[in-house]
Length: 318
Image (tube, rainbow, N blue to C red; front, side, top):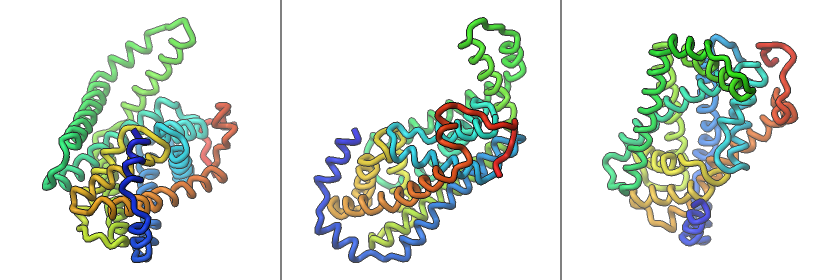
């Protein structure tokens, strides 16, 4: 799919149009967009630490893990960032892996609600393809299903915990499953009434920051789009690239960028040039910060691969 999308982008790309667009760019919005890209990840790290309470984890460790995960997204297929950052934090803090992944599930539910809300508000006035409407409905259905599962686990927590505790599996796989199930139930129990409102508010804040970043890039390329139209473009790109695909979402990102700009009245050749420049601005700074995070990360790559544990339980990074 990514290869076909990239081929479509290259067919519409005109080097002369790209060169003209670059030569006419306004550079101060680009600098501001690069700086603003850091803010959503800082908010994400803070929210993740909030969701992992009562375990106290330094913001620096969480931010390192997020950026290393971003780097892995850029060089590996199938978007493994959540897996990478979750395992890193679990190993460094000796927090149960299932407990960490439960917090990430809450993150994704909150982000899905925020994205669906912003995307619906932004694209409701556009004549979008039926496939995009179905994708938005599928996102809403997935989020609703995850909320229902979470509510069932919360309501039936005591009964489920008692049932799992009484089980005495004999095999190694069964014992591992029992431990993981108890960790998931502990993570669900840690979700309080105010957890989701805080998480959703943080998710909306991150989406707004990303929309502003998108608008700054659009403005820098001298495309006449409003902030609401930039939000629609962001929603189309994000929903279109939700399914894990090629490293860095290359190909699919540009394809849905061209599709979104086409719905907003931008010619395909001009949109193709913007999609290439915007993709570089959107991804390269984060990947470079991911490289830095990998180099100075408090979790070594050898430790991550071998499953080594830190010496002290619950120890916090310096």
